[in-house]
Length: 78
Image: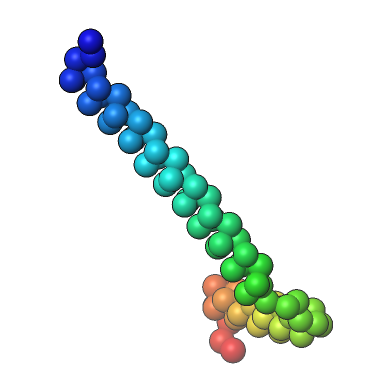
């Protein structure tokens, strides 16, 4: 009635679909787990005033370095 090759191919196809579905579900659950982990471990925003102060200090330092480089380029000793 049915050839053994057809039965084996059908069983293999059904097995492949089951394994693929299981792996897809596991992937989805893993992504959801990582999303929850990132939400849980997210840092609490701190006062931005300290960050602004640090940025201003860094900008002032960069401006000073640029002035020194321009002085070196023009041949002026500091």
